[in-house]
Length: 179
Image (cartoon, rainbow, N blue to C red):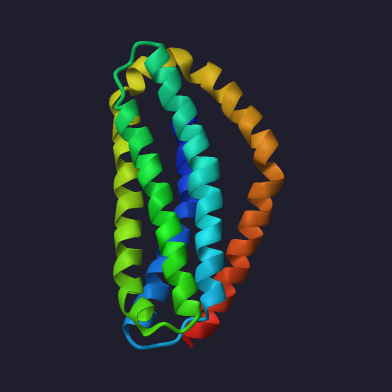
């Protein structure tokens, strides 16, 4: 189904960003310095790709599925969206404290990064499992969803390209820190 491919494509960028956050937090945990701007940029890009692009598509797909009588855990998904936004805000505050040199922030940042990554991955797995279980029921709405997804893509194309360019720059800078 082309609808599922749309979400899978979006997940590639998210996975790269989550792995970069994981590597950064591992470096900090091992006593290495990671420039705070890298962490801030990483979180900002995660907000763009997770909160902006992915959740927009995910919500639209799940709402359409529910409209067609397909059983989806929509309340749980939306509750997780709220929790995810709280995680992002809190993690950004910890990164800001890290930037200001607070030792406590340096000590807790790796664990909070792991918790955030774990939460995002579990949420994505819930949505993927829900969609895959309903794949046969979705065949009749795939074309309709595809048109809506293409409209979203047209509106987000510039933002996505800028985000991808920023990911590439961030990856290069993170490699420098790793050296």
